[in-house]
Image (cartoon, rainbow, N blue to C red; front, side, top):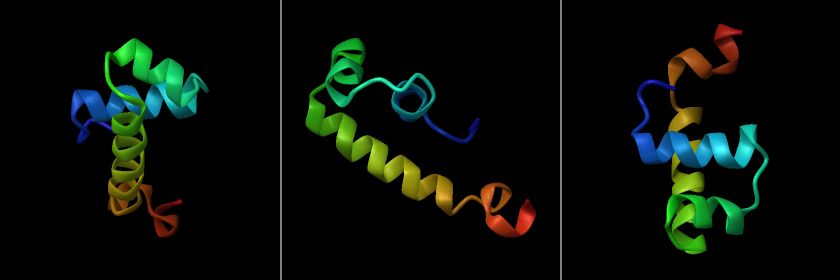
Length: 58
């Protein structure tokens, strides 16, 4: 995950590691819920394209 921007990493960790809600993540990051949703979706798409995370490398 070192290829991610700090904000992208913060969203992914908050949502999927810490299991925080969209509302709580937005509150912690000082952003809107819409921003969190968009950033999470775009970052997950970015992660899926990373070769080191693809199914063939597992």
